[in-house]
Length: 163
Ligand SMILES: [Zn+2]
Image 1 (cartoon, rainbow, N blue to C red):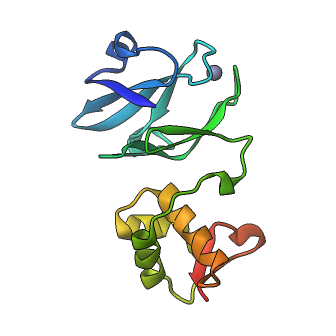
Image 2: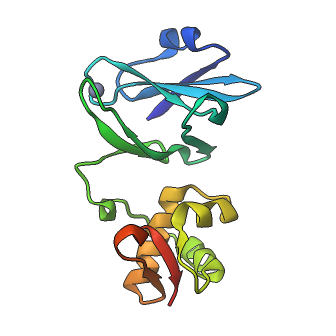
């Protein structure tokens, strides 16, 4: 997913989209929304709210590896696309979370260092580290596979603690 522009008002965004999977940031004082040309090519334009004052808001991250959104984007109408954006890549959610993977030993160490005996959501851990939640989820899963972390079960899935 490529950011192809930044505008102040939502209505200005469409003219900056450059085809499926491109996105335009609407920023006016704070991030307001990100407008996405649906990556499946259906031709629809999605507006993802980034401003908590306007209702449920996604988190937007931009760094040298590209843009990320959290949580996943799930259309409940139209093409019903469901996808994750992480470091400008699209991960389709006919997915297993394990499809997300990245070898980042430094981040694994940082995550392990802040795990406590209490189950903590990976997004909370990500906030503490200033990292994208998807990257922290991957690090947590890798720590679990090395028996260095434990994931909760049932309603506590996605929460991790020290082993
Ligand atoms: Zn679509």
